[in-house]
Amino acid sequence: MTLKGKRILLGMTGGIAAYKAAELARLLGKAGCDVRVAMTEAATRFVTPVTMQALTGQTVWTDLWDPRVADNMSHIELSRDRELVLIAPASADFLAKVACGLADDLLSTLVLARRCGLMVAPAMNVEMWGNPATQRNLRTLRADGIAFAGPAAGDQACGETGMGRMLEPADVVAEVEAFFQPKTLAGKRVLVTAGPTEEPIDPVRMITNASSGKMGFAVARAAREAGARVTLVSGPVALATPAGVERVDVRSARQMFDAVKAAIRGQQVFVSVAAVADWSVKNPAKRKIKKVDGRAPVLEFEENPDILAWVAARKSAPFCVGFAAESEKVAAHAEQKRANKGVPLIAANLVQEALGTDDNAITLFDARGRHPLGRGPKIELARKLVAHIAGMLAKKRR
Ligand code: C5P
Image 1 (tube, rainbow, N blue to C red):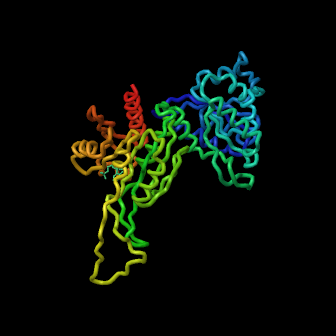
Image 2: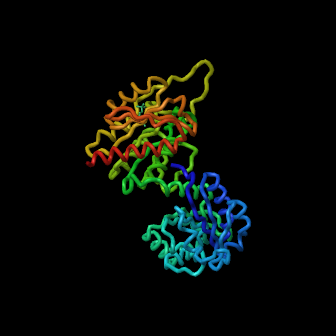
Image 3: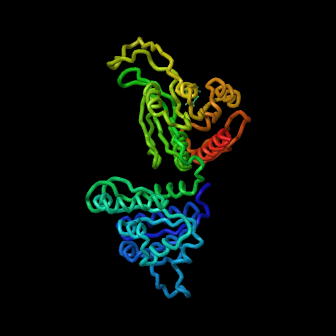
């Protein structure tokens, strides 16, 4: 499910991060959302309503006493047809108001009067964020079921550094997408491996598999969107960690095995997307091997542990999902792999289609047969895979 047609009310409060809300409105619009904007009086000091009106093509609302609204019910009407109220930036003051249920301007009143979900993207100085009063308010807001997008840590407009920066607009959009995903794995713990492994030959050379990690990271993101607590064990890749996912970085297959062993207890689902090297070099050289003309080195290999097979063979094994990247005869290899590894579900793709790209085509193989997920962006395929896993888990329980 994408954001196409989603009806969002973007509420802006007073803070320098309001400039990011302009870009956010544009990105939401580009994703196909119907965006309406309401601003507090303080927000209009940072960005003008004209800016937001030009970006959304819609009237911008700032006043509870707006004479354009005949019955003075803008605080009710503005939120009634909305599917989400998104406050970005959400100032410390505004979060305090929401936590207390105060309603003394248009935005706080419509938040209190809304029927739909509420997400806040906090933005404030590091000390304001850390203040016990703010922390107390955050606990209240979380207990009230309010969703959070960020904040992040980093440089702040005031010159200080720390927690309280508003998320970048694209990251807020990702959180909005997550908000609308069905929570099919709520309360579950999911472990994912992703990326390649590197097996050293000497301190500067190694053997590796071609893998960008994109599919594994998409699976981790999709599982977290579905409400799971996700741990991602990743080989060396150049990808940002999906929001809300705990990441453990490793290099070699051995290290990946150790990280999986350390994290496996209490997991209900294990999705092994990593392209683990099948062999490592026996006794890698401690010093760089010098080039000698006419004498190419001969490497001796030893087999790496099969991480997925090890997890699947455990007494209290989680629900295991393997990936099969094949260059030919995908179905036959996938079925064979499902049997060999002793896992209930294999996701198969052609390496020619999957490697490094943002799109992929996946077919699932389980005891009931084959289920083509079609072709599409890796995140959408990952969401379909997560839905399939959740369906199989639910059947298992029955
Ligand atoms: O390499 P192979 O084709 O057997 O990989 C199939 C599945 O097994 C993948 O899910 C991969 O992550 C996993 N695997 C593993 N440990 C290995 C090799 C593969 O967990 N040493």
